[in-house]
Length: 135
Image (cartoon, rainbow, N blue to C red; front, side, top):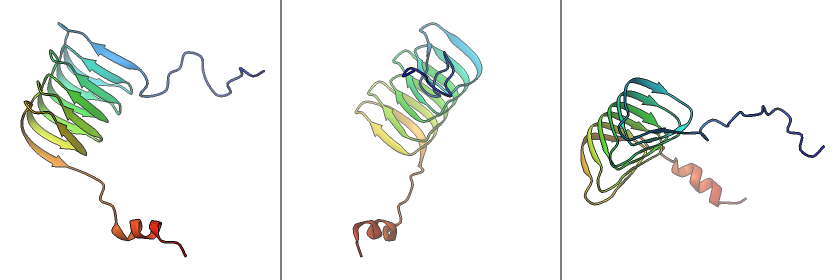
Protein backbone atom coordinates (compact mmCIF):
# COMPACT_ATOMS: atom_id res chain seq x y z
CA UNK A 1 0.00 0.00 0.00
CA UNK A 2 2.74 2.51 0.97
CA UNK A 3 5.26 1.26 -1.61
CA UNK A 4 3.07 1.93 -4.64
CA UNK A 5 4.86 4.37 -6.95
CA UNK A 6 2.36 5.52 -9.53
CA UNK A 7 3.71 6.47 -12.92
CA UNK A 8 7.21 5.01 -12.42
CA UNK A 9 8.57 2.09 -14.40
CA UNK A 10 10.87 -0.45 -12.81
CA UNK A 11 14.48 0.02 -13.91
CA UNK A 12 13.89 3.45 -15.44
CA UNK A 13 16.44 6.08 -14.41
CA UNK A 14 15.87 9.81 -14.37
CA UNK A 15 17.54 11.73 -17.19
CA UNK A 16 21.00 12.97 -16.22
CA UNK A 17 21.36 10.57 -13.25
CA UNK A 18 23.23 7.83 -15.13
CA UNK A 19 27.02 7.92 -15.44
CA UNK A 20 28.87 6.77 -18.56
CA UNK A 21 32.59 6.00 -18.47
CA UNK A 22 35.10 5.90 -21.30
CA UNK A 23 38.10 4.11 -19.83
CA UNK A 24 41.82 4.64 -20.39
CA UNK A 25 42.93 3.14 -23.69
CA UNK A 26 39.48 3.40 -25.30
CA UNK A 27 39.23 5.44 -28.52
CA UNK A 28 35.81 6.37 -29.89
CA UNK A 29 35.47 7.71 -33.44
CA UNK A 30 32.11 9.38 -34.08
CA UNK A 31 29.26 11.18 -32.38
CA UNK A 32 27.71 10.44 -28.98
CA UNK A 33 24.38 11.74 -27.69
CA UNK A 34 23.24 10.90 -24.16
CA UNK A 35 21.12 12.19 -21.29
CA UNK A 36 23.61 10.95 -18.70
CA UNK A 37 26.92 12.30 -17.46
CA UNK A 38 30.36 11.18 -18.66
CA UNK A 39 33.78 10.47 -17.18
CA UNK A 40 36.34 10.37 -19.99
CA UNK A 41 39.74 8.81 -19.37
CA UNK A 42 40.12 7.64 -22.98
CA UNK A 43 39.79 9.54 -26.27
CA UNK A 44 36.79 10.79 -28.25
CA UNK A 45 37.33 11.93 -31.82
CA UNK A 46 33.96 13.45 -32.70
CA UNK A 47 31.01 15.08 -30.96
CA UNK A 48 29.63 14.51 -27.46
CA UNK A 49 26.25 16.01 -26.53
CA UNK A 50 24.63 15.73 -23.10
CA UNK A 51 22.71 18.07 -20.80
CA UNK A 52 24.57 16.51 -17.84
CA UNK A 53 28.11 16.93 -16.45
CA UNK A 54 31.23 15.80 -18.31
CA UNK A 55 34.55 15.11 -16.59
CA UNK A 56 37.70 14.74 -18.69
CA UNK A 57 40.37 13.02 -16.59
CA UNK A 58 44.13 13.69 -16.77
CA UNK A 59 44.61 11.03 -19.46
CA UNK A 60 41.34 11.86 -21.25
CA UNK A 61 40.95 13.88 -24.42
CA UNK A 62 38.30 15.10 -26.83
CA UNK A 63 39.12 16.17 -30.39
CA UNK A 64 35.95 17.62 -31.89
CA UNK A 65 33.05 19.24 -30.11
CA UNK A 66 31.45 19.01 -26.69
CA UNK A 67 28.04 20.37 -25.66
CA UNK A 68 27.14 19.81 -22.01
CA UNK A 69 25.62 21.28 -18.86
CA UNK A 70 28.79 21.46 -16.73
CA UNK A 71 32.37 20.31 -17.34
CA UNK A 72 35.49 19.61 -15.27
CA UNK A 73 38.59 19.26 -17.44
CA UNK A 74 41.93 17.86 -16.28
CA UNK A 75 43.04 16.47 -19.64
CA UNK A 76 43.05 17.73 -23.23
CA UNK A 77 40.34 19.34 -25.31
CA UNK A 78 40.70 20.52 -28.90
CA UNK A 79 37.73 21.88 -30.85
CA UNK A 80 34.47 23.61 -30.05
CA UNK A 81 33.31 23.58 -26.41
CA UNK A 82 29.84 24.74 -25.35
CA UNK A 83 28.92 24.61 -21.65
CA UNK A 84 25.58 25.98 -20.42
CA UNK A 85 26.70 26.01 -16.78
CA UNK A 86 30.15 25.99 -15.15
CA UNK A 87 33.40 25.07 -16.90
CA UNK A 88 36.17 24.19 -14.43
CA UNK A 89 39.73 23.90 -15.74
CA UNK A 90 42.11 22.03 -13.44
CA UNK A 91 45.84 22.84 -13.39
CA UNK A 92 46.67 20.03 -15.85
CA UNK A 93 44.01 21.04 -18.43
CA UNK A 94 44.99 21.96 -22.00
CA UNK A 95 42.28 23.70 -24.06
CA UNK A 96 42.62 24.69 -27.73
CA UNK A 97 39.76 26.00 -29.86
CA UNK A 98 36.52 27.87 -29.44
CA UNK A 99 34.73 28.07 -26.07
CA UNK A 100 31.19 29.30 -25.30
CA UNK A 101 30.32 29.18 -21.60
CA UNK A 102 28.18 30.67 -18.88
CA UNK A 103 30.68 30.50 -15.97
CA UNK A 104 34.42 29.79 -15.86
CA UNK A 105 36.81 28.67 -13.10
CA UNK A 106 40.51 28.25 -13.94
CA UNK A 107 43.18 26.82 -11.64
CA UNK A 108 46.73 28.19 -11.95
CA UNK A 109 48.74 26.15 -14.45
CA UNK A 110 45.91 25.39 -16.87
CA UNK A 111 46.61 26.08 -20.56
CA UNK A 112 43.77 28.00 -22.21
CA UNK A 113 44.44 28.82 -25.88
CA UNK A 114 40.93 29.57 -27.10
CA UNK A 115 38.50 32.22 -28.18
CA UNK A 116 36.02 32.54 -25.35
CA UNK A 117 32.47 33.90 -25.25
CA UNK A 118 30.51 34.12 -22.03
CA UNK A 119 26.75 33.91 -22.43
CA UNK A 120 25.39 34.85 -19.04
CA UNK A 121 21.84 35.77 -18.23
CA UNK A 122 21.70 39.53 -17.69
CA UNK A 123 19.44 40.50 -14.81
CA UNK A 124 17.20 43.50 -15.26
CA UNK A 125 17.92 45.95 -12.42
CA UNK A 126 14.31 47.14 -12.27
CA UNK A 127 13.19 43.53 -11.60
CA UNK A 128 15.63 43.07 -8.71
CA UNK A 129 14.58 46.41 -7.18
CA UNK A 130 10.92 45.38 -7.22
CA UNK A 131 11.68 42.26 -5.17
CA UNK A 132 13.24 44.26 -2.35
CA UNK A 133 10.38 46.76 -2.05
CA UNK A 134 7.06 46.12 -0.37
CA UNK A 135 3.91 48.16 -0.77
